[in-house]
Length: 560
Image 1: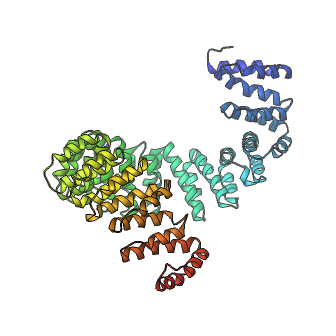
Image 2 (image 1 turned 135 degrees about the vertical axis):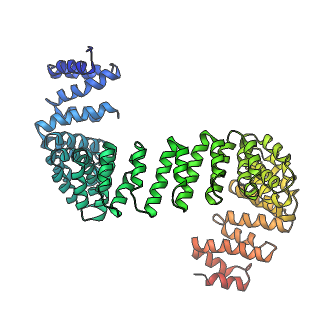
Image 3 (image 1 turned 90 degrees about the horizontal axis):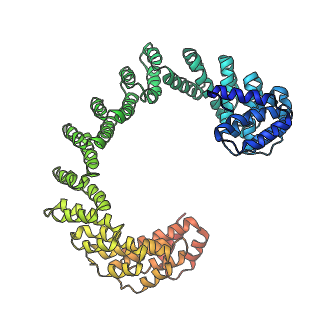
């Protein structure tokens, strides 16, 4: 069966179904599964509604048992609508006897929605009689939408009469939204008359947002009639997110009507973020005109970042033209960072022109990114730099980033870094290497210099994951280490990592640290943790331990 239009086709279906006998309906439902999705979605709800005229319980049960698709929802509503029209009390009794869960929730939604079409107050009374936890928010929405259509003021009064705040808010939103479509100024007047601050905020926010979506020009005109002050500022701030997605000119004009202050600055910043999506250059210029402060700096940086995604050179030139200060520095860095995504060598060369701020801030960030995409090129570029802080910072960041993907290659670069940069990089290399081959990582780390605690950093980081995966092997390796600074660092990490599973061993290991200050710090960390997680066991051990000094024992036992 095919009509010339969708409407004609559905009408043809309806005329055929209307004349079917119960037996024919049953046969047609059985054949529906072999139809195209388009035909099945149109026909099945009609068949179920016809079935419900003679056996509503069976029709409703069938519809609710369908797979969760649009067809199920339409079929369930059709069955329950027919049942509700014929015998609403029987339908309510049937729904009440369903097992709890999604099926019952869907049945309540279908029944309440069907009842609301003919008698919204009765549907509302039905929902009010049910336990709140079996009624979905969408069910409240569909019923209150019908209530508002019939009598907005009465629906609002019923929403405000709900005793629990979550229920009231769920009802207030659809009331405000639907009323705002019918009579936005009447909805505003109602919302403003609510005495409860939380309820007033919910109703007013929903009303303003709906009005902004449906009639931005009308809302802007109404706001223009308000006197300057908190009410006007709040209204503008509330609708800015909606207006900023469509009518940017109207949104900008409204902001100009706000009183100076934190709320206006915050609204301006949010507006810049929305404007930057479509016109980042204008957004940057708008942000520059904002009052000085953190909101302005953030707005400028965000707009520059968005601009630089499309045109990093233009964004960077504009950022450099800004007056010196935090906004300029962060904007320049954002633009250069976006430049580095496609041209890391050019961005890195530019970072060097920024002096100390570029060498210590932007350049290492570019090195991290570059080494993640092309480590060989990044390292080679870094080695061509003249000696100095820029070269050192770049190579240290590149080597650290390389450690995550190729720790052995990063290890080969470590000795080329200045000694002051080696501890952190050595730690990252050792930790990454130990994840796949802790023995090889340990052999490499043992050859590192003790100076500047390079070896100690490598040992400590290497054990972070090794202890987690194989504490016995890590402990055996640790026993073979000679006393010294690097062993102390390794023991401190080991003790901290095993304190949850074997606190006694953790304390005993910490007590073998040779440096007195580090030994005390490590033992305090382990014992205090033990006292906080299992105080009785910890106190019993402390009282009987022979490895603790009397001073340490007394100090730990005094801890509450």
